Image (cartoon, rainbow, N blue to C red):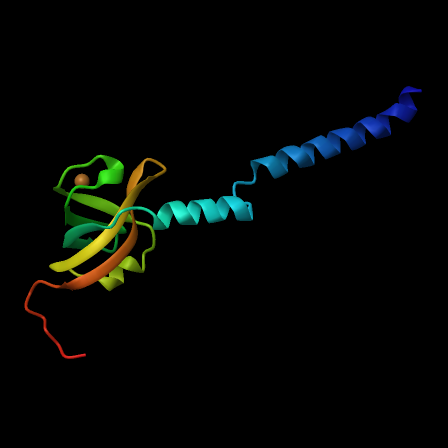
Length: 124
Ligand SMILES: [Cu+2]
């Protein structure tokens, strides 16, 4: 009897293992949509790039109040979500950006250049 039960038990264990693994998957389409909308609903903050550190993957930004983080205006260092952001700006650029805490680190989630502050007026 025990010998006949054990394959069933093994099957049940295999199924429950699969169920647990599926439940731990953090990225169902619904969750991805939720994450994406949370990201795009972050407020855009005015800032000025003070330093671009490509080696460290960081930007120093003089920023206005960041309401979603409860942070007053200051100059500070942010990590960037995407290293390509570091190629889009240089020191002195006026930007708009959104920031959030990702795994305990303040991270630039979105970045737009609004113009250079150094009289860089080229005709497009
Ligand atoms: Cu700050």
